[in-house]
Length: 404
Length: 182
Image 1 (cartoon, rainbow over the protein chains, first blue to last red):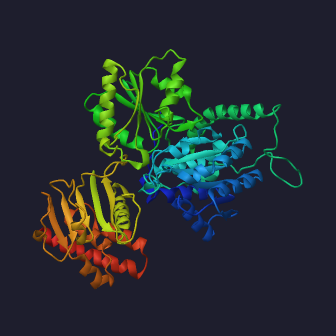
Image 2 (spheres, one colour; image 1 turned 90 degrees about the vertical axis):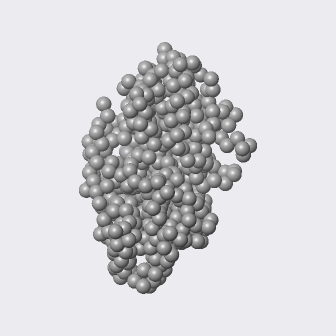
């Protein structure tokens, strides 16, 4: 049963998505923020540097670094020394962090980073898709995707609470669609300082870099030990599955706002067709579903919030009674002709008794707008799959043949 | 749901106008959403910004193709951009121009209205910045928004004298459009 989201208009203000996130970071009381202030970046770190200049973030260092690689490297040391750490990045900047992402996770440092998801070069694109974060899938970071700016802003506090839990100690990426959410102005309740102080305890790690009590982080592990580090990281990810749910519920108890835990569902109860998607597109899909429900098309939405850890059980539970599953991906694994959510959904279903056709659509690459008509057409095609079976398993959407 | 598209040139404050409209609509008790047409912005280049206004929270995230209203900040855009594209037949197109509306031969069945926002801005604000003035004109022409909400939003965004003068210009444009509607 999904708790009802209590919207208190009297607490809402109209601000830009990036500002809402920066504000949320501020009230989470970070100790170190690092940023490489050049494209690709977001207004998040600009707003945070303004807060710093205005003295609004006490007990915090803001480090301007010379690259995204350095931005995350600076947080490795800071987090190991016991600081609550934050950065934000996107696109090529995230890709440059690739090596360091493994280090943060391997050292079990609960850094939180907002990703304003954007396409990767070449060709140069500044627009939204999910390729940047999806390409970092195996780095050992929790990845959660948001539908709107209220969710991404609130997710900041949730992410710290999940990441810093003593049973988890894994870094987290909170993902918002670049431009579509980072640059939109809409009404939002800015994360409340008093409630956040109640919800999010101070970060008090058991082990820190301390000259008085010397320790090594991420030191040499020969073949006698390396496997166990990986094993324990995976154990932590599995524990995070429950933690993400718990934290979403605790957040609701304190703030009265809820967006789902690992997943969320919309009109899935009696749905023959279930669409799966991540990020801001789920808002548009909900509108389409309402429209089609009026025409008696039994369609529902499975919104995937947590992509890592991947919520196999939660997803298969929702899909078990569906007649066809449609997965939308703003990414592609080149050479497989599939998006990641599609591949992993199929994989989750394989060794089960659930036998439901699953079709995939790769959509919205490089910011191509996803129109209502396109989603309606995909649902029409899913209706056909229900009757006659799968003809095309996975495909690009809206390809302009005239350009090829 | 009402959808508004604002055409301008980079530097004319189209994005700010869309944002202020969203702030004002929310102050009126509605839900709103404002976003730019994401591009590689340059001063002087044609740009677009959008606002949605609705009684319920807005979930839609796609771009606006069939606006109810269009605002054109710079009449020279008419030569390079199809400003009436997709505009609903019962919609309104507001152009900043000193010409009468019937001088514009555009491919639309929507009502065309003009306002000399540049003159109002020069007379009252002292600078040819028309984005806020056109919001006053929008309020007068469409009735979708309270002029006071626009003025409050502008005064909060630009505190002090600048905001006061903008508010005065908004009031003037509002009155002119309200008159023109009669």
